[in-house]
Amino acid sequence: MTEAKYQKKVLDYWKDKGIDVTSEWVMDFRVGEIPFAWHFNHMTQEDYLNIPANIYTGSGLNPDVRNTDFGLGFLFGKSMYGETVFPSILKEDPKNEWINKFNKDFYLNVLQYLYLNRLKRLKVEGEGYNRIAFFSDNVKTSLKDTTVVHGDFLLRKENQIIFPLQWKKDKSLAVYSLQQDLNEIKLPNSWNNVETVSVFQVTGDGNKYIKNVPNKKNRITIKIRKETPYLLKPKNYKHEKINRS
Image (cartoon, rainbow, N blue to C red):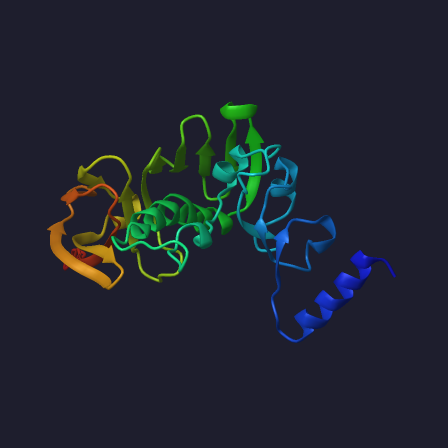
């Protein structure tokens, strides 16, 4: 029995016991056996298109592996490495600067990763930095423009994002801007029936209520400070007019 076959036998045993195993690196024989690899560098563009995220996905692209197609991390989404952010005994952080670093990685990577992972990967057009990836539900990502678009709604433009939260059952949105403050937020068409929006600042101590703001033609006026994550939740819905004739 080869080492690969032996590993598969062990993995099948663990799966039978309800245990999901992760691995450091991507290996072909582990597809369908291990759902998650911490370093996803060895996946090619064709691999991403042929293997759904619910079969095999990963954390990030290790920057030390230089022959990596790093553009795939944006086109199809990538997660993050917490170990490079969190403080430790050997890396003290009395000013809690790790929080901004964590927010940057989480909001600019993980939310896009979770959003795209639920979609079917259809095709990629273009070459190199001119590539555009197409997904189900009329979603596409552009490497050159650093954008993620759902229909005609811009979910991401460079380092500004507004993504639905995949673990929430309501319409909650996360908003984050890395480099500049914002004064207005455009909402997706699915918020047409939302009359009032509750705005929260996301902190390590929980969500801090800021204010309720009216939804005016799917736009809200609110101060969004750079490097600060926010949560938008529907507060009130517009009442449908009842035809009594």
